Length: 273
Image 1 (cartoon, rainbow, N blue to C red):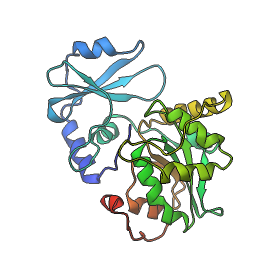
Image 2 (image 1 turned 60 degrees about the vertical axis):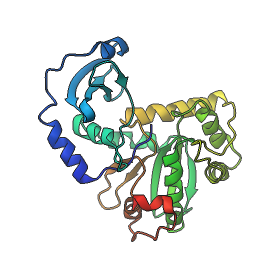
Image 3 (image 1 turned 135 degrees about the vertical axis):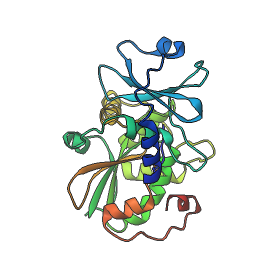
């Protein structure tokens, strides 16, 4: 459940390709009908990569989502499709096939969510970021924003629990810490990349904190986001509430703050320049 940034050319190319197949009368394979939850319907289909078929699903609550069936119709896949260039094709499909949600009505709920504050105390710009404590792309985003925090950026990390069994316990450890900011630093500086595991010991959440974590996840889903990290912020120039799903480009972080892009010294982050 983590995604990468898209290039405009990739999105345009996929959108163009999808326009011819989006309304095809595709028979629903048995593997899809057998796994559809009650009340959820497949409302649209399209041709995806490698002979797969994408299906837009809509339930009684929440935004639509996309799943895929293999070319032979035997298997159902849910999640992200990444290519060799680290482009997230599934995010492009979502942008092309699912109507954009107006984020402005959600802004007050984002501001009232349970989060961990990091960065400038008197910020020039504030970013809210949905994150899972075990998400490696959240870890990379954390590293990427550090130099910008010293330039006036404040990041409000909104913990959710979607990746691993202990994600909820680590999210609770963040929110219940005496110093949540210190706990966030420990989580990230002790992050184990080989196992994609946040470096903080999970704890049993109190009912209050458990409700906060669940509420964060519900808000993320209601806004149409299924991957971490997802940044939500107000554009400094227009005041519009905008989002960036997946690990952001370094230039995007700089633009949010309104400053030139800073030098990148971390080899892992150079791919995001």
